[in-house]
Amino acid sequence: AQSVTQLGSHVSVSEGALVLLRCNYSSSVPPYLFWYVQYPNQGLQLLLKYTSAATLVKGINGFEAEFKKSETSFHLTKPSAHMSDAAEYFCAVTGSSNTGKLIFGQGTTLQVKP
Amino acid sequence: GAVVSQHPSWVICKSGTSVKIECRSLDFQATTMFWYRQFPKQSLMLMATSNEGSKATYEQGVEKDKFLINHASLTLSTLTVTSAHPEDSSFYICSARVVSGSEGTGELFFGEGSRLTVL
Image (tube, rainbow over all chains, first blue to last red; front, side):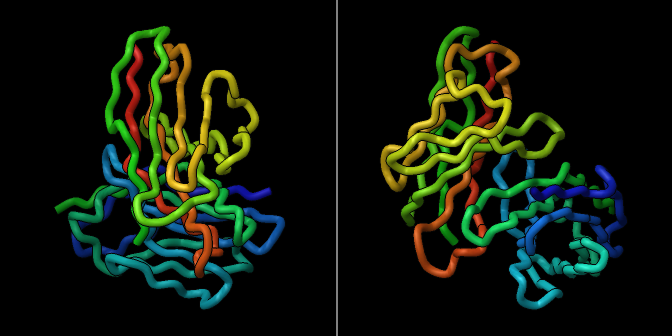
């Protein structure tokens, strides 16, 4: 079974500041991990994914995440926040490469202050 | 990337009526589609896995007779909320995987979502 915990339901940063959104996972099999972003009343857009290749994954819009097996973490970072980054972010895990059945975390709302 | 389209984006209905939501993969074929439900300010909850040509697999606690899923073709899955009630009001999101290629990593393409309001 898999599960995901996102620490902090709400994160607020100033424009230009570092963004750090935390995600810890639990999986009985090697995990595949994802970060998605959701804007109001819209579906989900994939930011990046970890699929057992490089542990440091670079995604779109300047985001990246590092898979740390020892810490069971997959935190999302961005060096400099932009106002357009304000949105809901979801971490997700699947334990198999072919099911596509994702288990989502609770989500973290990112607020970017001018 | 691949495009998944949902229709309608918004729907308001009276209590007791049924509502159908369509999920289409526009530029690829999807043997498997997934239906999620999202309450305000909450995460996505997987409702069911829709398999083309076979019965859907429902998650625990999801009423099969309440949420009818049909996946009649490789590009279309439908979710019908039967005898809808106000507590069924929610944001419903579908997702789909490509049939073949290099997408064997569990990556999904999501629809824009459908907001259902039951009066």
